Length: 205
Image (cartoon, rainbow, N blue to C red; front, side):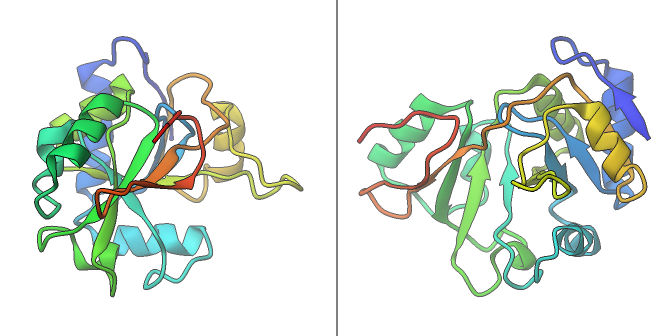
């Protein structure tokens, strides 16, 4: 199903349709402030495994991240962070950044496996924010790549996404054209922040 949602003023009724799908274990494709992403409820292991299969990844080794609504929600899933890291995250969010942080026991095991870290985002996107707020917990974020393209570009057109994924996922959100540059990944597991991937978000040490 392709569901068009106004990116400026998301309809509560349409958002509820997405939330109902997530609660029932569905897989969605949704817009972020960087690229479109595959997503599901982070507490549904079967849905996470399905996404891993879609991306041809071993669910035991896949490096998935998830999106929170704000910095206060991050604290529910990570070990205590220093003032320096807190101020950095606060300054950069919401925005196109993925923060690698030390995970606590509230992070579902399938998302951290044998690692002790987790990737967390606070995306600057009204649709994503409303979904998470109505759902009551974060959703998985795994960047969507056009595998039919010879250079594996990121999708930007919801209609193209629908053509390729309409039989592979449960719901696709049309929230307008997306970006083609993924988030910047920052390793914040200690005070010496390391840039793992340069993306849409600018960062200077």
